[in-house]
Image (cartoon, rainbow, N blue to C red):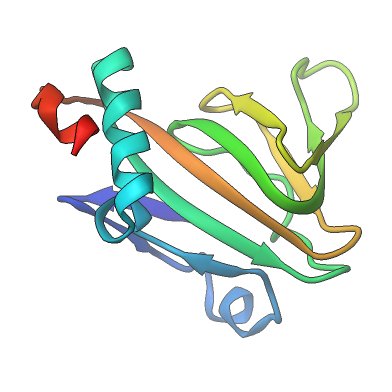
Length: 144
């Protein structure tokens, strides 16, 4: 699980066994450390009036998430490399919908929507987390 605490994301493992599993590499706080991602995050903040953070996920073939879960933020997923197979439960009375994101695809995943992820081949995607926190942003930051 990833939580927002102050200006940074902090990953909090569900349990020790989950941390020991081979898994996707997560690169947190890109909205702080990578200039173009900072500008993109600031632009989203300006448009939505909410705080935005960004992480990248790099996966190898066969990587999976730790099972069905939901997030406490709206996700804007941008597929940069490869493909990702998503199982998304949009209706609690039905099975999941399968969605495959490929290079250039953008998917919006609303907060609280259960999902599970598999990687058929190498994959790299960004996840912009749009939080509930209001954010007043200096408009000049998005252009610098």
